[in-house]
Image 1 (cartoon, rainbow, N blue to C red):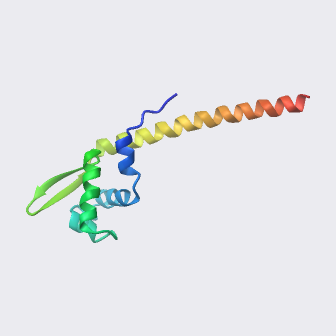
Image 2 (cartoon, rainbow, N blue to C red):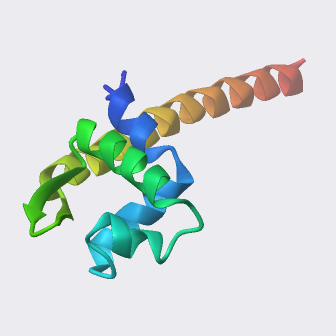
Length: 113
């Protein structure tokens, strides 16, 4: 059982600043680079770079509104990320279950000696 993982997606989500940005966008707290910079301890230039990474991964999309871009989270891509995380969790649960079963067999064999 192998979980298929989109490395670009998980690389984007792996950064704590980008996860915080996703939280802010999902909560409706912020939707522009300027408004995001009010909530994060990084420069506006860093915010723009993080948004570009999230955009390349398909997690956010920007639409020009006046002089700024307004960003929104792509619900479908976020759902794919959640599904991938669940699949990875299931795969590790299965692996750990097999390890436990092997350890129990070894323990039983030692008890039988």
